[in-house]
Image (cartoon, one colour):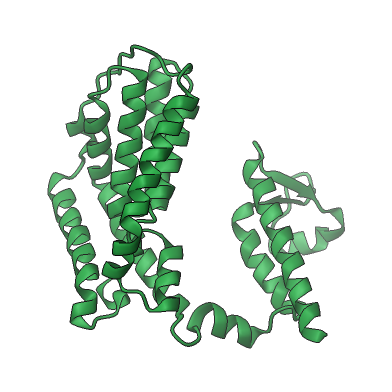
Length: 289
């Protein structure tokens, strides 16, 4: 009975946390709460405004942490259980290894973006579009290919501003192209074990190595990518312009550090190659990352 109560409490806190994050993330302006009753605390922390009012800006980034702490505080989840199940791991499942692999790939991919390498590839690819349909196909294909070698999170974060910039320059609705980018990135992330943290969790839980995972998932991923592209072209067939004139964008200007881009890309591809060889080398993924 006690375990059922803890499960119910943890579920309620989880649902409220997710709902709060979505609510704050979708707001156009940050949520600010006046807290007159906490004015003394505000004075102590140095958070008072000049007029003496105390105001709290609620940010969605810290809500998951607050939700986790609330679970521990209300004993919906014990501190030992949170440490063992969420960080150290049990049996074959080790969350810290998943986080190390994921954050390492994010770091290398982010470094590649800082050099301008990803923007260079994106501008090169989209420069060949002459119609709205062609641009959607290029954005979709580029997002899928980049996801295969980085991660869906990186592609969404880095390409979204570029897609919006292109659409604003030619003055048409960016929604079809943003949806194409999001769908392509999420679907393509199924292909490889390291393309998505969820894949890493599944691989660890069931002892699936990168090559075995790809053997099972590559064909369904390709089929889903093609099916989704056909669906997007059909859905937005009336919204895509027949002719477009993209602004002149020099990809060389986007490439801020050519030598750094080559070195970082080499490190990224070498890491991914070693990932595939890890079963034959009897090497876990996290030391390679």
